[in-house]
Length: 424
Image 1 (cartoon, rainbow, N blue to C red):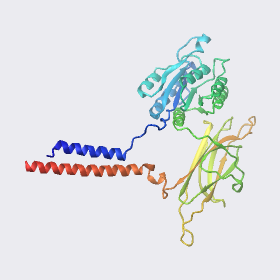
Image 2 (image 1 turned 135 degrees about the vertical axis):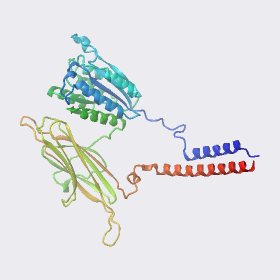
Image 3 (image 1 turned 90 degrees about the vertical axis):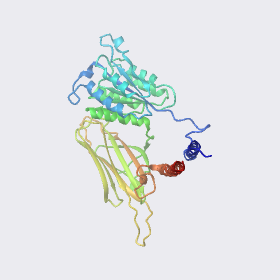
Image 4 (image 1 turned 180 degrees about the horizontal axis):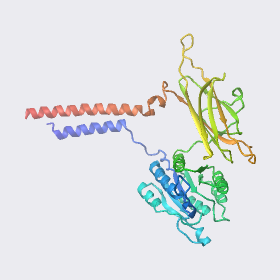
């Protein structure tokens, strides 16, 4: 005799079988282990100079705390993050003690946002600026494994613990071959601080950014943490030309070049009908420049007709100016009604309006980073056409099928229960 328990057990067994068949296990024996999560340590200067009130009308320390709260809220779940301080504990004049004043505030590991924010809230500007020892300590905090490792140093002044030169420390860390990158951010930096932080960053392939506002600080640190979670590809060196006809043809990728003050540089990209060109350019002001400058990225046909452009201006408060553009190439038919399949050559022009004081060298040109991507447009068949689902359409189909089967089984069970109830 069929009982309710037996029917329910059969239904559960059917659903379990469907789940196993439709959703295979994520990993099987013999498959490679999952990639190690990236590690990031934020190194924050808490020296006495952080009391200065010149960032958005508040102290540098207050701006840093606010930025850290924003950053901690946005850290990806798969990033192991830590926080180390320098100059946070010893308020005295003993140089020997002051230059040892660096310690982990929050250990590198899975992030508990509440605990990390609470730890940051307790900080107050105190002592010296031992950047070199702090970098050595951070490198030890991140050691072990093959994960992506990144140190983000935030400071408002140069190191006060020479002869341990932090630039030499960065070079020593790079020489270890542990693939650790150091990015530096200077809060309202003077010329000496700027020079030192650029040297630290360049020694490990990192970046330097000058910060004048709280939102700049939080935005840049978020970018660097995200970059650790999804490392960028190694850029390819290229050389733009003075006109489109002679320009190099570039595919999807990341490229570097140098552009002189006020120069125009040309590159070419092939875009097929139904594809979309996405391009962006960043130019770094790696030396003193006059205020009021701009960068433009312009797409045009080989005959000189402008298609689209992107531009951005600056006023001396940033060391990096970026802009971008998007160009969808429509699918067209020729005179005979046949679909055109030949790619179009798009000319990309990168221009800048930088100028510099007479005492500043203008050679070599400023560093330029050009990103190019060519994807299927909205009428194509790539991930873009999936409205954000990407290759998840098969998953959506499986979910629909599973729902249909569950509905049929449940309906059958309900009908059987009603028939039994009427019989009794």
